[in-house]
Image (cartoon, one colour):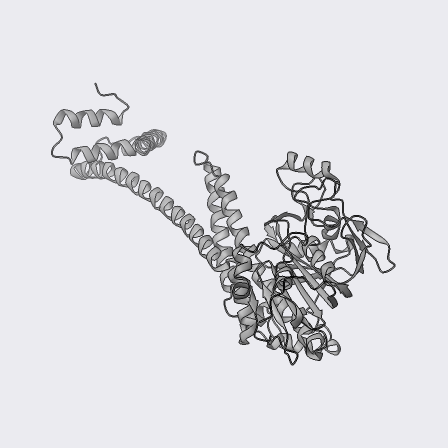
Length: 553
């Protein structure tokens, strides 16, 4: 394990820095004629109006672009995970369904953004990062999307990297400094095109905008540079027009992955590792909270040292995961670590990225399911039949979607490679995915039981009413059967008389039956009173009088 030091290594430099934000967002259902539409299909239909373009899985679109890193990514996962990520195998066999065998994950990418310029604090020189990818991940049956922004840079001071990880991935300010800057946000973030021109910039210093939005909508407003990146997706409560609308699922801090290639990482002290591993949560200027359990149990709870020796001979690659952040630190002088084709960098950008993406997909989907249940319950008015019917439809649809989520997306085992599997389990455990799954499943099960019991109650009431009508019909049937003939010879009159008699008789019988149905509950109570041997004759008479609306005295 790394030796403890009291002072942060101020002269450390990050030779190679990669970071990927994975931001889950909840999508509102898209309604079309005949039902709901898939979000990615609606997004693709509007493709001419925005910069996003759908991409096939990049290593099967063109065999000429198939690289060893893509092959290593594919074979790292178990077959059922491969089918989720990449779809079924492609063959010459024709299929009646053109969507058969496709992956339920659909990726859109925009290529007009080439750089990101960050002014971390007022008065500091800006830091420019190269934007590698900006992607949106849609999923069949799930009302959510995941934004992925991957950036990279070289030769940055370690304290600058920590400041980037702490400040960059924040959707909106949690408050404001005395200077007017957003609390814990970068002073200024700017998206750049290939020519270095600014395409959008942050506005976290516009305090009145955020205060007014929350006051009016009871929902947070996101910074303009994130809003511009997501368009044509628009914030659900904003006045901006748009077919596809999203809302935040969790806190404004986005999950982040970081890859740090250092010179001699074994020289880092314990405080350095704390600040690197908890960079997204621990303010760079604050003292380390030595009595916090996350600090005292840092090595045991957050670190994986399968590829760490702490010696000059190596290997010196360390994984740190706290759920919201996955950080990989290694030696830039080790050829394997910085190799983008076969080494750890390639695995970080492919295998470990997908592990992190799936873990946060699980958590986001479960939170969306829970939110849908809460919305259904809040909209329920048991005195309104239409509200009850709508509630039943929403609960049954949510239950059906949850079943598909369980069988299509919910995994405990992703890979047979021990380190990949242990990383996934560590991330899932810190996110409490298993506990959250049990909670949501219990909530849906309770809702399902409620619907079943309500249906049984309605069926029971119907059976009671039918039983009462049957008893009344039995009396009439036995009476007419006893005479064996019609009491009044209606059949001997003229045709108009018989028609009139039939209409009058039908009207009388229909009236009697409808009256019996309307009084079926009271008739049921009367029959129950008649079967009660302890009830006196006067009590039974009062029960009979109640059938016709009479009151007992």
